[in-house]
Image (cartoon, rainbow, N blue to C red; front, side, top):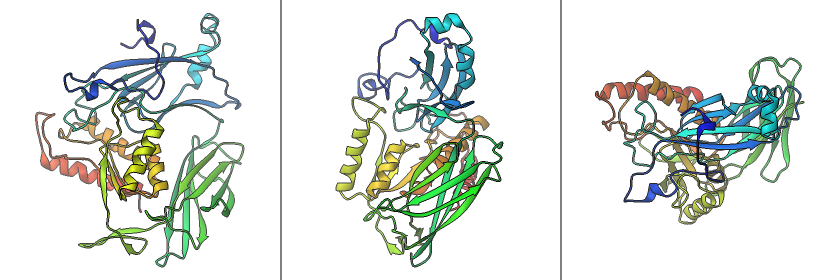
Amino acid sequence: MGDPESVPIWSKVSLPHCVNAEDAVDPDVNYYQGPMWYKTTLEINNPHKNGRTILHFEGAGQKTKVYVYMTLVAEHVGGYDEWDADITEAVAEFRKNDSLVKRFKGKIPVSVRCDNSRDLEMMPSDLSDFTIYGGLYRYVDLMYQPEIYLTNVFAKPTIDANGKNAKLNVMFSLNTPNYNGKQIQIKLLDTKGKEVASLSKNISTADTSCDISVKQPSLWSPENPNLYQLEVRLVDGNVISSNIGFRNFVFEDHGPFILNGKRLLLKGTHRHEDHAGVGAAMTEDMMREEMILMKSMGVNFIRLGHYQQSSIILNLCDSLGIIVWEEIPWCRGGLGNEVYQQQGKRMLTNMIHQHYNHPSIIIWGLGNENDWPGDFTTFDNEAIRTYMKELNVLAHRLDTT
């Protein structure tokens, strides 16, 4: 089960691909749950001296292993968060074998094993009211990074009470603490592409931040989803660009929802990331058509249930002006052991880190119907409440807004 070269039969597919594209909507059969393999050969030429070669997975269901030829290089549990497999050393080691290089004509063989089998120690539960899809149903990207590179950029915009002035706190981190002499350059472009702020600074710590002042910001709202472009550049390194928005909101105690100082009635729906004929491997055109239809029918709010969804959807919500509630896949079944609970905390952390900059998001959801027993021999309401409190503390620590 762990040897990609032993799989006897292959069929050609294109990514994104879902193994349950047809059986998940067939009422007469149970949909397939089990292992599946993907393989390809890659031409790899990293232009950076001592650079890192990364396979970036935008989502793979549900437990995944990545191999360079027969060498296991990465494992991941979770079908909805994004993650990286660094194949740098494995590629270098493969190239030392002349017979293998000749056999694969200089290309690098990569295999990926996905598995959506029922697993009591994995979120989500099989008792969830949605299909636990399998496959590489979101994009896989081959990325070349320099030796030292930016890994994360977090933008925290705040505006004053009258909306006339704003401050943008920009936090960033790198893949290594060994970056003496490196410099960061930051630019902020307004909704028309005009540069409204910029700065440069030398990096002094692994996770650092800086503040930018913005006068008369154009606020983000469902009626006017104004987006700014933030560009953070590591000199002699990489660039991370992110769309951000300036807005403030509050749920008043026993009162209405307030956005940018005005009452807003939230009118919305719920969304799962699948479609007949493709399962979870929705195309960008399908996603765009779906979200535009929602907007045209008057939706200004959506709950993305019950798992972290594609960044394509979040980008569409940002640009169309649809407010978002996004949550982790702790759905029904009860509460598992420490491995299960740590997995939920990691999923929550990844979701917030990866979607932090989206102005459309106002709620980080901690789960769905968690008082639903069934997976485990014991069902402890108090333990579920305690774990929910722990997730709540973690979410507020990761996002203080």
